[in-house]
Image (cartoon, rainbow, N blue to C red; front, side):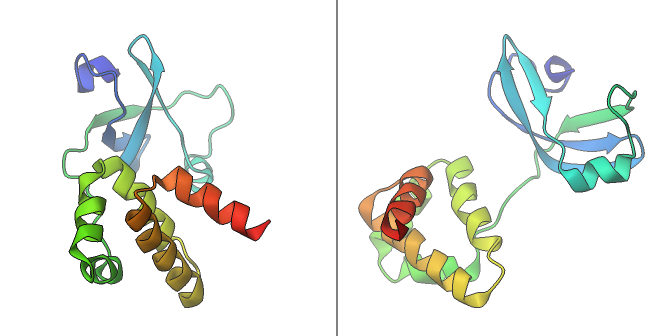
Amino acid sequence: LAHQIKEDCKKSFRVKGKLDNIEIGGVATVPMGEGDFIIALKASLRKQLKKEAGAILSIKLEEDKDFKIEMCEDLELCLSDEPELLESFLRIPKSHQNWFINWLNTAKTESTRTTRLVHIVSAMGKGQTFGEMIREGKSVKS
């Protein structure tokens, strides 16, 4: 199926379409090697589908070329205080930017969001990847 959607692609890409009658969009495919891909389904989507293991699923997918994760206003403001930080952020691959943005957007409280903003700005200043930033944060807590 992946070959029909995006021929000769060996990297992850986003898809949209329908699983049974449920609309999906911006779902990432995960390469498994030899041109095969899987799609991880969140628990909420699995509940909506109401399927047991081994059940047949009707799939209609296409590449989601419109998928974008926009940079939050507060993150852009913090990074633009020092132009080299914003440049550093924009230099990393879009998929890596999305890790930072999604992590920031999943903060449940304003204080957590503020703490995460500080971590991201600091990571850009140090030239850290998302993983390096998270590991450093864990070592500080220990």
